[in-house]
Length: 286
Length: 280
Image (cartoon, rainbow over all chains, first blue to last red; front, side, top):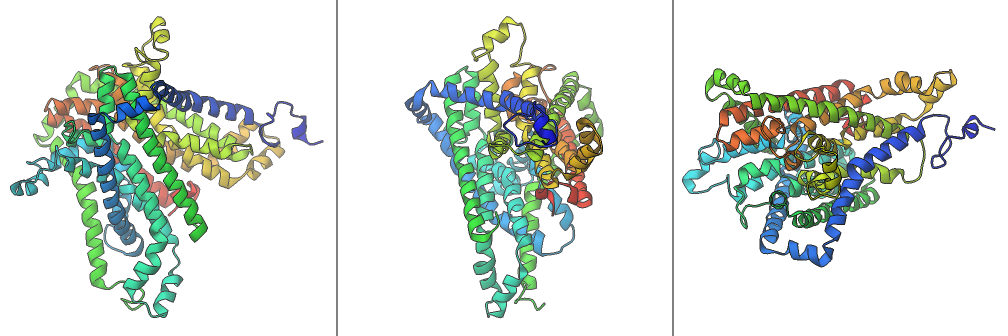
């Protein structure tokens, strides 16, 4: 009879092991997770379900809410697209080329993760205001960036920047140069090799990074509200409308909008998982 | 290697480098420069005078307090979850791992909202909390809860993959040699994951001190009482007190720079002892 079989207290849910402490650590982790994350989220779903599907639909399709959801959704998609294009270029340059200051730029890519969103928000607002360093360049042409939907776009590009770079970078690093050499040996030009051999292998990572950036952008609040102008129907984002509803003590309305946003972010998450599952089958990496 | 066959020509290469660097300068370097420039616009005296304000000092103290509660709690959680997940086999493990990452896919505003729905005046447990004469929403406990929620996965997700990779052989050896379970954890497991743990703590702390959306929803913005540093930045900014707003913001930006520096240093020096996803 093994030692573990004698330990009556080992909970039956784990396979027997000589290591102690499963009950304690598992119990603590699950309780803490439930108290902090699962129960509060369940309360939100419960609140929203009291409205019923048609109740949530009614709230979500009132003109102001619909406009805010559209602003959040479309500008996030546009920002994620820019992030995919420039994220690919940044990742390519950081992996393949050497240039002065490369390590610093590499480290700086994570700045949007580390910089508090409110700080980013006021910094971007001051840069892109008509008297700011960048805003002043566009003002003579009558282009206003801060306090318009363009400002929201700028903030969301900032906040989503690291996602694509950090998803593509490792894939590009592991990409076997032999494949490119084979392509070149077979007579392909460099452009053909890059666009028909390398790029297709990067597509899953690009899509995953884009979806992550999109999911983050839809929920983003701090960096946006300072630069957005927050005009209902024009530059009001969905998270801000949740805050407004809460300040009016309209808990049901806030819960309904929050539920719609949760559904959008879970759809993005699901898309990411399917892309990665596909990529594992097709390329053998995520 | 001849250019143009296995690599790009000089022109293409430098165009791409210029595009990438230009993009990073525009979106990362300029905002950072703007924070410090605006903070020092009226000179160093005005900058330092911003911190004489009692409400600003209270905000700094509250931010430190909140991080000092949230980070250790998430640290204990991260280690517990990692021990259970990495050292044992049980059904539903992958579900548990996904649930731990859940707060990352929830909007900060929604993270605050859930606690208002739970403990707010018209919330599920609101009346109960009222009876005890204990304030959670629009008070410090709510800010701590919201901060714990948004920083929940940071430490766990650094430690779990590393511990999984390390397996159980070291711990089994220690136990066989007569060490107690707790001693094994302290002298064998903990040293094995120390750099990943530090990495997670750095990221967790940066987010805990910088969180805005979730905290803003539960704080109530009571000056000197429930304003953290990011909320104080917002208030000063909305009052057109730009120098003070950017002065407080520059402290937070400094924290972000220190975090990035320490994080990069860990990746360069101790990359092999970090979570597999962090190794370049």
